[in-house]
Image 1: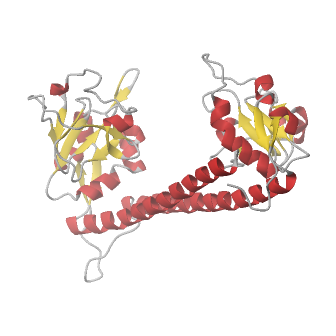
Image 2 (image 1 turned 30 degrees about the horizontal axis):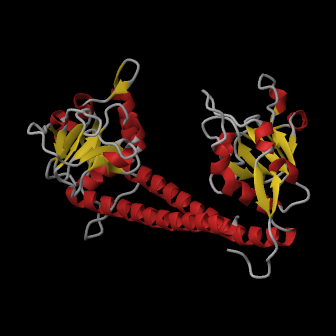
Length: 392
């Protein structure tokens, strides 16, 4: 796909021919005089998705800035070492990068186009990383990578078009971030008692009652003793219950030859959590899912009839619950929260009607976040398609 006014062939060049390749350097970390100033220092952890750099982390003083290798504003950044190899960004201002990043500083080509070109080529470049304990693409290999590049006028046209999509993606990320901040703020106010819902008469509901989780839940240990070939699920800390084949790249427990007679059968309206990962939100709620099985390592429970499941699920995702988890875990190398300790955790429980109102309100924010994430995914798919069509 090309703009109709351009017909000439793209020229094949090496990355090292379209700009100077600069490998970053880190000023001495044992000298505080290099850090804490007004100049941007970029490491792989600062590189976000879709072009942008987190500018709120490490900064350098003028001394530190002069000590490092200066990268010109607009230069393309490519992580060449480590687990995040292949991440790309664009320098938002003159900056210094660490040695895990190679920059393309180009004076003769459109900087925005060079970034998009590098973004399009990142997966192909990543495959060149040496097979060793720490993946790496050295400067020579990086410089010799061949790419196709059009005239300056076509570069500018492509870059302008893709920048519009990038700006829309950035705006969408901001919308999602602000909604998540709103959810966190409101959740804290609700579960700290600062925000109360009213009854039909406009009055507060009755005071919340302190309960133990063991008072409102019942442990579930129904095993797959008959070796039924039921769908195998796992718990994802973002999505909750997910098919195990999606969690582990198309392979589930049965494919691995595991004994699924020990697995637990999950019915509707059942909670399950990983006792070793509950602190990072590894908990799910089955809802309408039923006749599935999960590993025996998970702790499973149901609630009593005076508990709104959605309300409890919202509570289990709060910092208030996480603090209680840290107080109640046990273990050696790894901490665990088994049901006995989970059941001892105290929390405040409102009446059923207020539980429902709280759950519905917080769920409405969750739904809005999900919709905005879907829009973001569509934008990213659109950009991926355009990159594939516009670069030759």
